[in-house]
Length: 246
Image (spheres, rainbow, N blue to C red):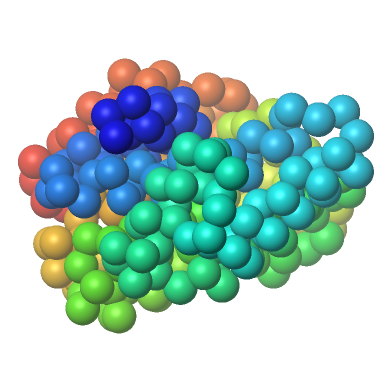
């Protein structure tokens, strides 16, 4: 359905422009499935920005949890749930990791700070890393079996560097840690992710192209900046795609 495809594509673009642009380097027949996953992640991520009370956010997250429990059987006409159901069916994706993304987003509904660095890594591992791993399965199911480490490290690294230039920075940095410690952890995970990605088949490269922007975020965070221009991120993604190196 062209209208639904366009709606999902637009949601994916609005939710995470870097992941969206990276998906454009994937085979055309797989792009709708990638956009469906990205749109789902975007729907979860924006819930805390749409509600003024945590309880309302909990209700919205629970709706998604219930929808995943019955995926494929009456999604109520919601374009993202229908596209997600088709992607799960067509690509043989497990539903449990998608449920874990919901649980991780509950943290964003409350004002509590991240308790420690382990929890911080876990948060990005259950959100962004999970999304990357699901995208690997969409692109190349056989190769995806060996991509868990790379997806885990890449999601954590990208989440950390993005978080340090986001409005949520103070909420994400644990009380017992400093900005410098978080950035040092991000740099370490970034180096590990690049080594892991280098060992993967090129068929999975589009999933990891957003990691090419991580250095930009690191530099911005060290300068105390709170923004990385889109045109610079787009250039780094394009360059990584052309060179086939992150």
